[in-house]
Amino acid sequence: MGYESFKIKLEGRLKIMLKSKSTKIKASKSKDSLVVLGNGPSLSNDLDSLSKLSTTSDFLAVNYFAATKEFLMFKPRFYSIVSKQYWSKDENEVWDNDRKRIFSLLVEKVDWEMHLFVPMVARSSESWKQHMKQNPNIKVNYFNLTPLDDFPQFFKKSLRSYKACPRPHNVLIPSILFGINLGYPTIYIAGADHSWIPEVFVTNDNVVMAAQKHFYADQLKSLNSTLLSDNAKPFFHPNSLKTMKLHEVMHKFYYSFKAYWFLKEYAALEGSQIFNLTEGSFIDAFEKISYDDISG
Image 1 (cartoon, rainbow, N blue to C red):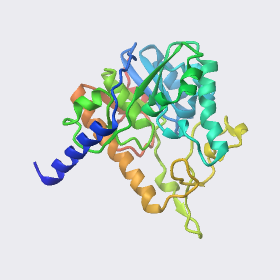
Image 2 (cartoon, one colour):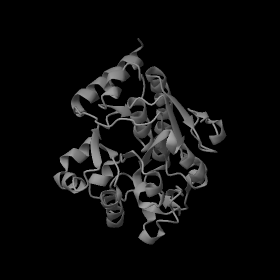
Image 3 (tube, rainbow, N blue to C red):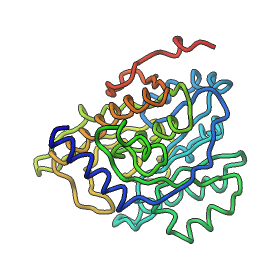
């Protein structure tokens, strides 16, 4: 074993020992395959095709999906929210309120059994837990955000027990991990455009900007939140109005795309296959197929 490999493995073990907490996931699959619904703009073109998969597939939704009309159409069995910002105070009060509103929508709307995956930080919020208990249909599952960058085979036990995950720079990464750990032999991802790179530009004031587009932008215009709009906006550090530098933005992109290769390797170890249904997706780790390629 080379020095760098040894260092990465040792640091990973130490992070898990010092940061991760034991947790028990009670969620289980009910169908043969899983569809992870990203919020990319392409999803609006795929809704009819996706609905035809409901007889053989469970659905997993993320972030602001509960605020859309499609939420009640798909009634996802799983829902994941990863960012710690949902449980901490944001410097921008409007953004803070938008995030908190999602939990109220889940409590109001869910009339089917739904398993909600949230990071361990949520377990420390008594007020949040009491709020979610208002709807017994929502089953809360906690997981650790302890990040790993390499060697999924070495960290397999920690990944299985939700004590660690591939570096979670976006919600899709842990969501795919959930599908693997839940035992789905086939996982499809949709709305995973990840086409941010061509959208990035730098202003004359050296502010790094991008229009990070979502399929629900038109539906959520009434919220009047720049957080949910398709207009170009800066990249901010978590819970802060401090903007990110270009190398910080690119570093974030690097870790996101690298994590998918990590997941591909882990999926192979666990007997799962991941297919990308997103036309034009920038994710290069998973085999890209069309809806016509899915039999049954």
